[in-house]
Image 1 (cartoon, each protein chain N blue to C red):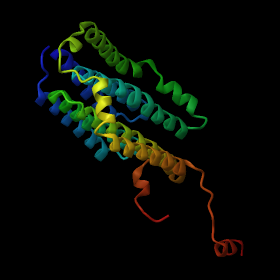
Image 2 (image 1 turned 90 degrees about the vertical axis):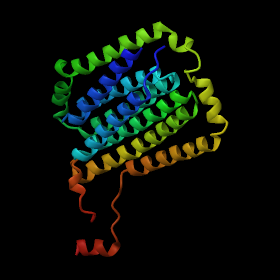
Image 3 (image 1 turned 90 degrees about the horizontal axis):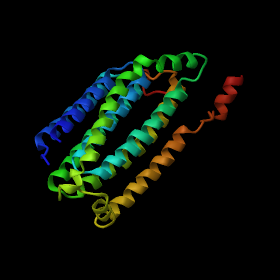
Length: 176
Length: 102
């Protein structure tokens, strides 16, 4: 069990170092996904299976997809096909693939072990989290909902195409 | 079940946070800076989960869920800003926006 913790943390540190030293954004993103997956394994080991699931679904799933969409939006053009070929070379995804494979083996081992659930009071499962979330933390949940609404409105406003509105004097000056 | 030492997990979270900080300070590409911020937020969430596991309480995980929702809102706004930045300056270098005018 303790060995699994050290393997997962070594993978997390290594892939994070790879994230901040890559020059190519897509390579860094793939290593970032591996880093998030290893942190999800750490959450599972620390007795927080619900947080581990959220880490995989929201961080490694939704947020990374947003990042990849933006990278793809920024590189529109004729050279993008060549770039895609360059990015998807075998040599570049063997590293993250190997790390993710190690994590997968570790996860299968941990799930087959079943001692996290049998161990007793250490595990804080989704039921306790839900009771705490909708009991004493109700107002904080509502504030988080307002924050998400503000995020949606802000992203919509910033992402909108802006039409440049000139003052009519400036327009006359430009014409004249 | 062997208990995971508290100091080791906290040191791991500190190392991840420092890596994110170093990335934020050294890289000038705005996309990489946003990724480093994500790494730092994730390290902060890791500390909350460690605390939740240490005292076997759900409060740490609740705080982690709040950090998660805050990070997703931040990423949505940040990526929209990056798209606008790229449209305006045709680069992702933050030094291009060092002047406030315009």
